[in-house]
Image 1 (cartoon, helix red, strand yellow):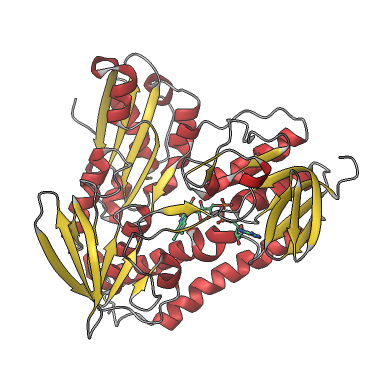
Image 2 (image 1 turned 120 degrees about the vertical axis):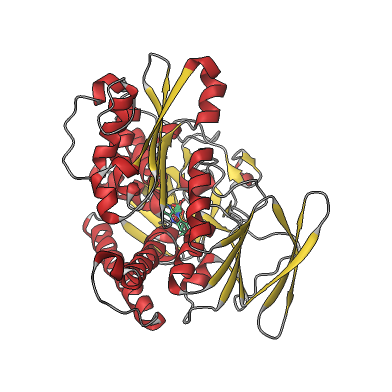
Length: 463
Ligand SMILES: Cc1cc2nc3c(=O)[nH]c(=O)nc-3n(C[C@H](O)[C@H](O)[C@H](O)COP(=O)(O)OP(=O)(O)OC[C@H]3O[C@@H](n4cnc5c(N)ncnc54)[C@H](O)[C@@H]3O)c2cc1C
């Protein structure tokens, strides 16, 4: 296909697609980037960035409310939602401007409009066909709902609607105690709403180590965020003041909870329907595109990155897959991505961060006698005490082997995951990490202390 319009044609300019475009252009490849919405996709416009801005505003509200604990006299006079939204939208707008400039400066051709795959390496937009020597599918994901649950954008919301709210609701039911549900629950509680989370699984953020879920549950209980685990959605009705949601537990008992709003946060499905992927023979499963560890689909020259590929639906996974595919196409033979080495952060108050295996999975992999764990309580960490945050660092290691899982709970621990990720990815042993000098007083020290403890020489922890 030497007569193709582009070396790389990409469908979707979210985290996966635009990262691929930027890297491919850097490597001297010509790039066509098809996008029907704003460049940057979910993460920049309705995902990571705006939610983290709300979470930061929530932290500021908590600081104002709790300032007395630090001997500071300040008063909390409530939330000015238009002001919060202006701050949030300003952050998004600045990043969007930067990204747009970057894409332009790298000479990437942006093809605006809704694309559909119409040939093995061809995408048609508004009746015009564009071809690539290689095609990268990066069409992202959408908020799922449940049977019988109609999202109206008024009382029953997805995260996208929730990001556009112009008031703080008096009360909210959050359906789904995963990452997105817990983050919104945390924000709304800090803003003053009554919040109830409904989760079908036995615990909140069930993908995380059980100790992390339990710590989050304890913290949420203290913050008066109600949650019902092992409880499933049955139906929803409109009331004069909002919604009445019927939920049930296994065994049959049902109850009704009322609130002003219902947020549906039950996961994200792949945006692939009707895009022509199957027609060119791409192998799919439940709407997801199947790709191998080199992000290749079964159709030659066609790659897939980001949320449409089964696995963690995270922006940084999409970025790395996008970079990988660009380098693969350029013949640089990049290292495949280790999915377990991808860090995961829930940015609630407190935060959960992790990399590698949780304890249960580690036992499954190495056997109960094949692993060791150590938990270092942030009670012994000076900076965490200064910040008045509770939590822990939990390490899981293969017996006499490397650290295979790091689990963190506490305010701001998301910022520590970089070091944990290096430890995991370098297959470091506790004895390698223990001698490293960590700055004092930082929360990072807690990682150092946990490794000291695992190496059998705890400093600020009991032997
Ligand atoms: C509320 C929320 C909070 C989140 N927070 C975090 C977080 O803190 N950290 C994190 O790592 N991840 C977070 N995520 C997940 C993250 O946003 C996604 O993993 C990431 O955006 C996936 O990137 P992607 O490129 O696969 O898809 P997307 O970002 O969804 O991009 C796909 C793009 O393709 C375009 N597109 C689709 N179909 C077509 C078509 N036919 N024609 C043209 N264009 C098309 C879409 O318009 C979109 O721009 C969050 C998600 C949500 C919803």
